[in-house]
Image 1: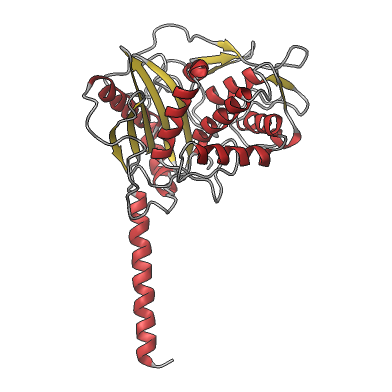
Image 2: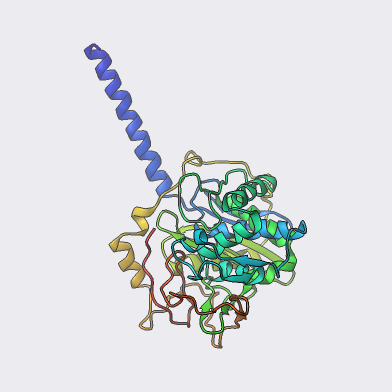
Length: 370
């Protein structure tokens, strides 16, 4: 290779590295969010809606939808047993630490994954409904494609990170709206304030439930690579809206942003924007899966988050639309079928797969591990 070719190759390599660095910075600065009217499907607000993102425990919305479709097809009922297997029990936290062989109803299992975000129970559901975890995941992807989630792919039913697992704010809005429109009978699962096993209580990680007027769902999620994510829904005076917030830097931030979006959707004009189906893909980095670990899981970021708590360890919230919950949580039962122990080994361990707390229910402050 002569000198001119060498210099040319070096320039091309340098340009490629600069482009990669530029894309990395652009993706890291992405701020995906969506606000949609459920009844009209009108997109009220959107930003970086097609940027690929790790779904974290928002994946469990897809798990629930796949289960609802199986129930509709007559394959099982809410009373069907879900058995904890060795494979499911081996999942990392957040989890219930149920022992292999222990059983719960599908009803209890759904409450557990949507409130506590238990990774072991999500896999147990997948195996019980799909025959195997992989077969269930295949069904998740088939259902996602069927409803128009054009830039989503799942590799597990719980949202633990891995190559090939991604979604977008736009696709999550499609999923949330579809859940609300196709399966209104299951809406209460997404609005639970918490559940009890009879011996231990678990508050919902969604800090809007019971604290934002009209809040009725849906799910939170966290991993280092994705930040603090939340899909929310609310209904007032016959108007129903869904918001999606991805990549927030704290529990409080995702709750505040979600509340402000929902309030705008419930009280502002419907707008003349496109519908979900009409919104065209945009964004130079939309095919790159964002990884914001360096912004989320650092000592500095952890310090900032710790400063966002009061002396009792409760998350400080800034949105004027979130109020204190000055009453006990309304809890439902979710646990093992009678005859199985409802105090499995490790039940009192700190859950860290999806990080959350209630405004006035002190729980241990966990540390992120992903």
